[in-house]
Length: 543
Ligand code: G6P
Ligand code: ZN
Image 1 (spheres, rainbow, N blue to C red):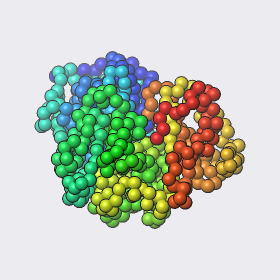
Image 2: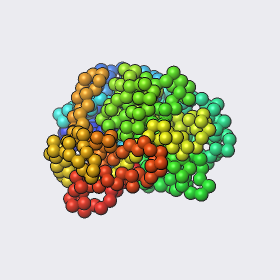
Image 3: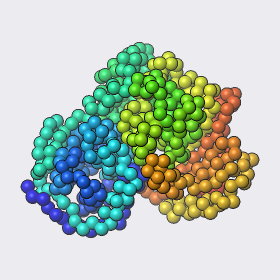
Image 4: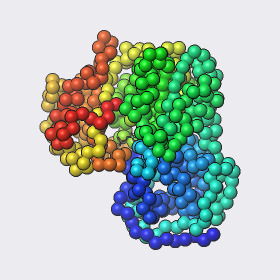
């Protein structure tokens, strides 16, 4: 078994985005492409020798091939041990949990999250550090910089490795352990939640439907909801992961998880519905005829946190990403705990969690989580909701509407314009940036703008500064209008426009958000000149 040093040339497009490197499968299939990026990761971790790495992915097309390559490269690059999920499967939250539980040095997750899978769709690779969270910008920039000057990579010339049988084996000098991530993750959940209370709920008349969208959470959901908590068989649907997610788009929102939404809005709907994404870190929560926005979900869970055993002592603080609605800030103020506003991307919560400043955090992009790991966690959010329902004995709709009555309703909607030509996306952002100075103090559609700025964040723990994190119009009445280009798309540019308005009067809290926010929506369309520039009359996705 020899270590080969293969000569290569840098690829110019290996800069990690919001969540690792995401490209079309065929880009990753180019000779040396995957190997170059993996070697760049390893080069950015000079102290890896003898250390443990966790490895797995969401099972999408190209997962198994990539795992074989990475194992042979890890051995040739002096890693001491790699813990692989059986069959190469590992949800993102489970990787985070296992990195922490086994005190591994880091982990590689193969996923393009909520993007479609299959030979013509997306693949991705991201690195997580010893805290279990996504690598900091410092590390992702070091990976990118390594990729730009890469001349060779190291790999074993060995045959394929059996990744389907639990147990330990040796590859070169390196140990390989095949583990059952589902069992490890389920144990952690049992530690956090009151499984007896959840069993009573799920074995009673309460009916739930969990749609795994043919992605990674299927086996976890079957195990936790059906096997451990005794929900009837059939509670989990689309529970077998497929390389192309059954041809669907594994993104838990009303557009891509439409079949679940249809069930929850039908006659005789179940009490509760939930879905997760390709790699298991996102969540969508539905009640009977009721959709919970992710921003509201975070606020509601924060308000009820103490019903969950792991958070009985209360929350240390709460963080949300900048475009996430301010609903949770109001809860934090009522609880008397600190709240933080970070840029989009889970990695920005890492320092706050590690420093013990926050217990809960979340994003409008269907991400919710806590300090139990360093990734957002779809199934955790579902268990947290079930805990609140079990404790309050109320429906999802009642829990949320009562929350609004107490704290006010933050009407919220995000409009996405996907796959715009990249130059148009840039042009729109440049043009709004140029208008920012004159927008401050200006009145648009009867709302006056308090500040208009380009959001920058100074990390309160390490002082690092992240600029250009989204353009904000902050209105005097607390409303907000935000513009960002997505950092996770793989085709052209995706423009996201976020609209938010607080309504304190309970009599006016029952409107359709598109209606309640129509003036902000119009301001957004006018400022971007989206229709003139692109001919698009409507967004591709509304959440
Ligand atoms: C991923 C990240 C999230 C982020 C989301 C949207 O899921 O893990 O932290 O909020 O992508 O990012 P985008 O840049 O596409 O708006
Ligand atoms: Zn994801």
